Image (cartoon, rainbow, N blue to C red; front, side, top):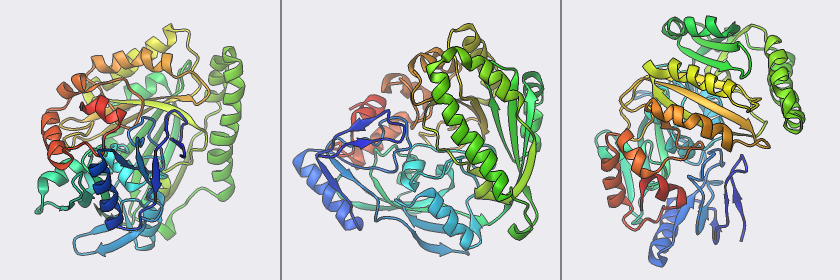
Length: 434
């Protein structure tokens, strides 16, 4: 009996059975067996969710042999891939075809099924989340049926399963809307707190994508704006290999990780460390293929809570979070990440029906995250915040249902597709009910 552990080491389980299906038929067989035995089955990804959303109770399915691009439709501008494909593999494959996703987050280690099922998102753009870029999918339901869902075939399944929390079925293929490969120019600029917040709305309006980081216990922020350039990839001006290694690999990961180990042992040094390091931030501009600009290496293991609050309440919630942190005795090393997204129409999306600001709070894996997240979660809830499904939170079905206008509709579809709860686990029972 092997142990499953997620990337952050925060969640683990001991499944009874582990399998590596090679095709949809093998997944169907595993689901049918679990239904007959009245047990459960989970297809895991790479474990990048901080919650136990994909933790297997009985049968663990690994997507190791279920990766790769299946087809390209250049007339419809869609690409279909196996759901076990890692996002970084899809990005590389799309680039080789001269294609790109419209938007993405800053980590590309996840499988497509895991990233879309938890609502992984970027910032800005027409569509911020990966789920919003889905045009079709195929899944194996809890009764062993293989269902194809598009805008014209089982559209209700497509509408919900684009962000299905792993509760509606095992995704086997996903079809994404794509566009011609494009170049982004990234501009990173250090700013003071007042400068960054006073100009925030204008900055968001003037740039395609805006990502901002506030360093707790300081008055300093780093803003990153990404804008499309009307040039070919061969005309881009990426960071040099040395500069990329020094700033993104060594400073942001190797050195930062080592300093976290030191400050975790001597927490009294953290505030001074943040004040000094934030003053060392420098501006830089570079351009490259979109996925290379969106994504940053992340080798320092951390824990994270992220909430989506209504866009109009975002800066107020951020200011209140800062005040709470500074009034507490907590010492926080990781920056707070601030992103914005347009509204979408996905029933279980944290941006459903409203423009949103996402506030993400992190701690090093060796630091105590519980007190930090407990301090800030009530603030996020007070502003109507919705927690990221794949990141730490304490919410339950009873208080999540009022936050999602179509919550009951999602549960009804779950009853239809998985009547015996073959895909259930403790996390889903907590956030969706039995």
